[in-house]
Image 1 (cartoon, rainbow, N blue to C red):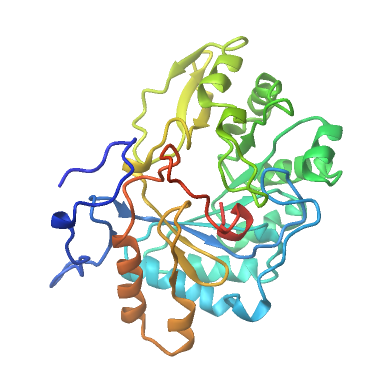
Image 2 (image 1 turned 90 degrees about the vertical axis):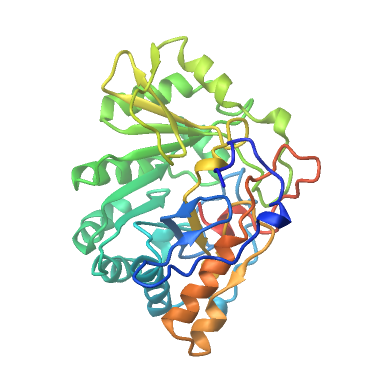
Length: 357
């Protein structure tokens, strides 16, 4: 069966549904779905807590945190990542949050994952608060790459957006990441209409000056307050239009593969800028991600309405093979697309901070 198009959304034809693959004799099991996609990129949320309150993610007062007993401990995280890497073919592991730098055992988790065979690529998505103090430790542990969230270069806007006056701390974290060799340092930016949508060219100039790779991300319906409206979202086309007022952008000839960002060469290259049009230019047909929440639930899509509990299996003494099989079943049920354009679309009950970016 051919892979779905980028725009596909419905459910599988019942006649096409088969049992999830177990690999067969001599074959490595994998996290495939009924549409031919194979998940090799694992996103692991280490906490739902954050030290910022970005308006598109979390209310200023915060959210009820996940109860501590429900959270995976460090050994449980490493074990589940090990199952994904050594039994299920995952090749990239990204630690997210909330804010993953708030996880006390972060360096130890990274060090343990770096010892897996085969060793996966290990990256981190962070707001960079405190990264200037931790960058060397994390690199020594095995961290390969970092993505830093930065939505504005204006201190007053930063404080208004994040409800914390911490722009200088984020910039120090970026500098530390570059100095410790976490290249390429990527910067993730969400533009919001009437808030920071005039800053796209300035942010790109900043990234070019410092050698960072900038990626703009369309705002997605994952806010805790549930107030996202498509008509208020700054689209990928609008972002590109704003950039083209000051830069010459040419399509990147490099093969995109399963990368979420469409990239453009800036002023002839080699510098590039990316745009992740999750809403208006979805890439569901090439998605290669599986997600593990901080409380041990597998999500086969960022916008999934259902989760699969692995924490209970771990704590009940299940062996790695049983956990792998449950994970395969979870991924086999993945829908062909997120369905944001479908009138029946429902925003996930969990906000982004509790899912993991």
